[in-house]
Amino acid sequence: MKKFWQLAASATLALSMLVACGTEKETQQKEGAVVVEENNETVFPVTAVDALGNEITLEEAPDRIVSLTPSNTEILFGLGLDEEIVGVNDNDNYPEQVADKTRVGGIEYNVETIVSLQPDIVFAHESSMFSSEGAIAQLEASGITVFVVDNAETFEETYDTIEVVGTLTGKEDEAEEVISSIKTKLSDIEAKLEGVEPKTAFMVVGGAPNIYVVGQNTFMNEMLKFIHVENAVKEEGWPMYSPEQFLAANPDSIIFTYEGDDVTIKNNPAFANMTAVKNNALTVVDGNTTSRQGPRIADGVESIAKAIYPEVFND
Image 1 (tube, rainbow, N blue to C red):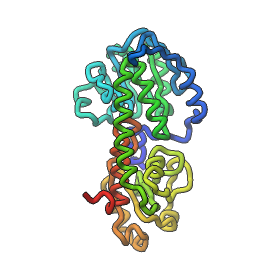
Image 2: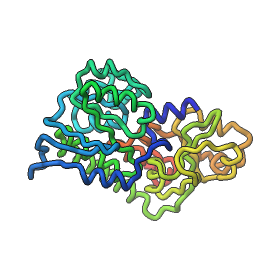
Image 3: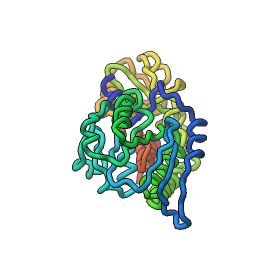
Image 4: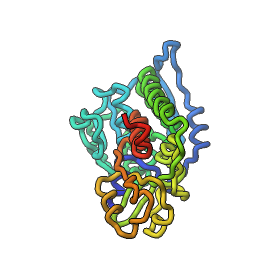
């Protein structure tokens, strides 16, 4: 259970208590007022609507930025904002430059530290509102601008996030380059998988002592669908499966996001007759690239595709 919540914190996974639906997000994004020149350079001031429906206006490009979640941090670094980023999440581990940034907390945030960094904007995340709402209120009361990024459940929503962050930071061209790079790599993966026979799979995000799995309407499920994999989990979100449920689903492959969980399942006699166990189709992938809604989503998709279709990617 502990590992599951660590993943939720570091990867900013969607939680059931989120109240904003996809339609509302789309409407809010369309309402954001953004002015750009013909050369795609942002003209300040700019206004955008965040995940909570708040209109956030910046008079000029921010010189000091704090990121409260790893996915936001990866986007900001991907846009070339190395110098502007002054604070990051405790769980940030990519890119390597995060090692030189001030840590402002993991699941809970140190408001005093954030305020001391004098940020022009703080990028929070919708998926962590259950733990950060109080901190955000304190930051706003201190006169600090906070933009809550949408919790993306699809690739398109991720592109929207990258675009709005690019707009607010004066990095629109860079945002388009990041998105184009992701789409190019996804197209290459898609081309390799053309004509493959679809398979079924589990994605396990916590395997001991309880089995937590990836369900429907999640970002990881979007990755599975993209590579023609049917998710063996029919429930939404991140349900806990009993050993009996796990055994009954019997998918072709089982993907894990934590080292050691694969060994736990493999060495459990109760699962010895599962197709994936008998065929040794148990693979650990990087839990960061497969869950963070940012520039490395294509890397996450590729890692899952290689695990499920090794015959296609055996180069």
